Amino acid sequence: MTMPSAPDWPYCGLGVDPGSDRVGCRGIRIGESGRCLTHADEVVRTAYLSALRPGSHIILPGTTLTKELLNRILGALSEGESSRFGYANLCEAIIDGSADFIGATFEGEANFIGTKFRQFVDFSFAEFQAEAEFALAEFYQNTAFEEGTFAERAAFNGATFARDASFRDCQFATGIELESVTFDDDVTFEGTHFGPTATIGPLVCAGTVNLSTSTFAAPTVAEIAATRILCNRTRWEATAALRLRYATMDLTDAVIVQPLAITSYPSPFSSLNWPVDESTLSTGTPGARLSSIRGVDCAMVTLTDMNLTECKFSQAFHLDQLRFEGKWEFATPPRSTWGSGIAFRWTQRQVIAEERQWRALPSRPRTLRAGWGEPPQDHHQVPGLATLTTTYRQLRKAREDAKDEPGAADFYYGEMEMRRHSNGWCRAERWLLQAYWLLSGYGLRASRALIWLALAMMSTILLMAGYGLPDEPPKQEITREKIDSEWRTVIDKPDPENPTGDRFTSKRFEKALNVTLNSVVFRSSGQDLTTAGTYIEMASRLSEPVLLGLAVLAIRGRVKRGS
Picture 1 (tube, rainbow, N blue to C red):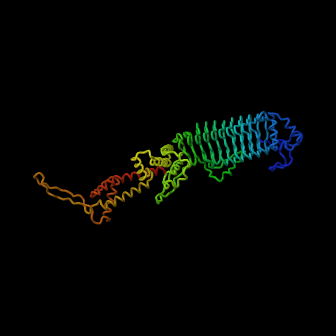
Picture 2: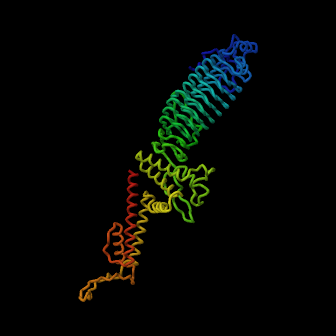
Picture 3: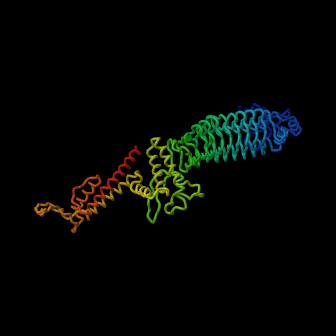
């Protein structure tokens, strides 16, 4: 269906339509009056309306219809409590008053191309048995198509909705065309059944696009620029590609049967047939965000270039099969905080939103929750540490399967953090995890392990110089002893004596350094030691190689993550 041009109908030409920049009324003439229905005298108007019956054709392109005049037309077409149209052509018409098409039936084509609806319009429960064309239509106030039925093509390409629009529980048998549609406020498709839809959009909405409980029965490509997109309990029965801009998307409890790809689209949408105006969203960040994937089977989901800073992952299924592509982003810990009057930095890594909520709980010490955001309003909604551990473990596996070493390492760190804080582990294991975290950041922080190794070596050197090395090496002594009535020569070496003189000399420091360096690699220095020095060396040979191993492990991981 195409829009008629001006010469396609004889127009009235009388006066100037309110709010129009065109000279002369463009309403089609009726009868022999030479005037449109609005400007014709009452006799002609009454005759026209008297001829109407339920199922009559309404051909009034370009006509300005007041609320009173539209109600008279609907009354003439009424059959019971609703109106029945045959072929309806109201293209480029101007409807000045509120329009009540509730329950109307359009047996033929419904042509509302370029129609201007100046007040509230309600097509709820309307039935379109043929094509319904609303291309370039302008809706100035709230609009409702709730529980409408579209048996054939439904096109809203280039339409503009200045206020809320509702397509709740609509049925589109052959799909809906929403190319370059602009919604200046919220729009809801909640409970809508989209038939064999090929494309949705580009669609621009300054408010919320509500697709909750909708069903997409056929392959779908949607391009949406909006502030928020709700897809709670949507059902995706075929492959779908969602390209989003500016929007924060909620996918809670969606049923995904076939692959679903969600992409943060980098460039403004464009269309060959209709202009796309994103100016109402230009103040926001173009990148798209995902706020929740709870209750979703992630085996079929691919996220590309998405911001996952606020995304809730707990209670999702097959999270280890979720695919991240492109540049994806998680939140990070606060840069620093204060505890007991001492400033310290949190380990920089990727953190899921649920951990941030848990760390901000009012039950935690104030100094430890500083910088983690506002406390959650309902702390009962915050997952427990066991759930957070599982969530991190599955995300880690997903990144390991994708050969993403940096991402897997961050999620492994988060998994170990949740285990360390968990109350469900025995005391010995918790202390082991505490030591593992403190000494090397779970084998991921080389700097931490090297610092501890340096401190251990320095301590060993100082202890050796102070207590472990004798002033002089003990000398062998030859004595004769009578054993079983026989005299025998005995060569003995007394234990080294504890130092008594100046203990911290360069010579003693060199000897202590030699002992310490040999201890790091499990070697004996061959140096004579005091009793205290022997125990110091044993402790050094036990602890320092472990610290060296942790540092090597962390460096290896850092190299792999950087390659």
